[in-house]
Image (cartoon, rainbow, N blue to C red; front, side):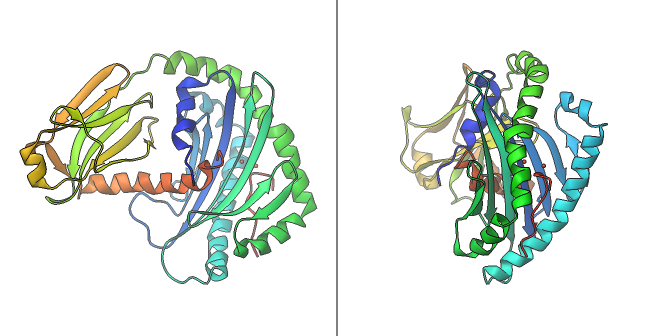
Length: 339
């Protein structure tokens, strides 16, 4: 699947006029997970920027932007918190249903829903999206215009038929996508994006660069983190020349604080980089930072750092299910039971 993740986050600083996107992602995980990965989480973003967050540990809906705190004392906020608590339990049950339906047994499995809408404030055009994924693949998708579910895999046909027969729920979804979702974007765009423009137009956070290696014979990662805005260029040089052989470019990943991280991996044997000079060069907003590949510059990533990075990586991989299609409140925000 193609990935639109990077473009989505570019909207933070490039698209204050034009297209705007409101998205909610529910993620349920079954099985033993590593530290930092919750059994259930719900994340809402506006133009790629996280605005609220809920997970199975905190069990509260948390505002992620100062302007969202204005909503935190309202009845709607309380209702949205209760909805997420209900969805958490439903997702736990749904994963067990899907494990049986896919004839699986042990291991970690994921079930997700991404929903929301796009709105172009120049043309007035709007479009909704509502997709479900299981274990990193599309499961069932709602055609918002036709109000019909489509199964992406044979195991999803049962779900598709059941949900397509629920006319009351489909009508609620129609109301949500035609009115509520776009209305939220229109209503909230003006009072908060003006503040956002003033803030983000002036923010510049320089990347922190590290050279990482799991062990002596492993590939070397040029890892940058904590930077904003998202646009960045990472290049490996060999003896002063740009070097692309045996180089793997990782995806742009979000940090929880709104900054970003990215990794570009160089796969060469230690004897090779001892005989030649390899340099990782990072260009960000007119600034250039670099590190020469030497033994004393390398940090081991077989540590707590790897756990934190892997936690973020897992979350981003889950996003990829939906971002390829540009990938919300029954109540359209609620979860559907599969059985």
